Length: 245
Image 1 (cartoon, rainbow, N blue to C red):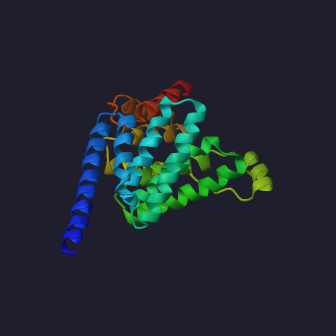
Image 2 (cartoon, rainbow, N blue to C red):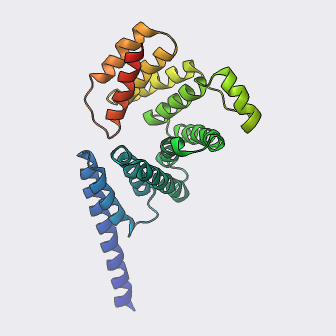
Image 3 (cartoon, one colour):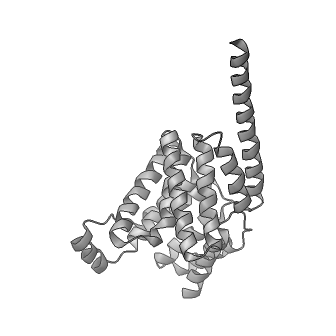
């Protein structure tokens, strides 16, 4: 009996060590900006740690980070996978700020593939998930960022469009550029190395017709080095806004 118990304990430790090693390898790949390799490593770790919320968040992120390199159909599939793992992370640990944030991020990535009614429903969940993430971790710069983006999108819906959509789909959440600017300001204070915060801060100024300030702030973001998978896309948005000013 003792030998069987010892064998079970030893096997359990071996699996745990294996998961840790795979996660370590995945982290190394992610640091190098290699989401495909990172995803493979994290997926290997998942086999022995299927209910590890932090690991599930990492897997969700890699699926999202792969999207810019994929074709349209594959992008949608990757977004769906990202959302699937994010929801699993919340089920695994509902007290994890990162798990709720992952849901908000994944929903943001899948929104372009949704119909009008689904987009409205997704927008409500994005706000709710980001609010929860921020409540659980007031120092989450990306939770502030997601709330900033949410207010950007909602404030950008014109009155006529809002009335038509309301008649067809029901009440649409309201946002404000002032709230968006406030969230991006807080995100920058928490983490000033993320260029996505800086660029969206500048883009919000442009949306508020504060063009001179917007040009300066967006250019600051464009001058920052790329550090994360979606930095190139962020810079594209920044350049597009600059060209329209």
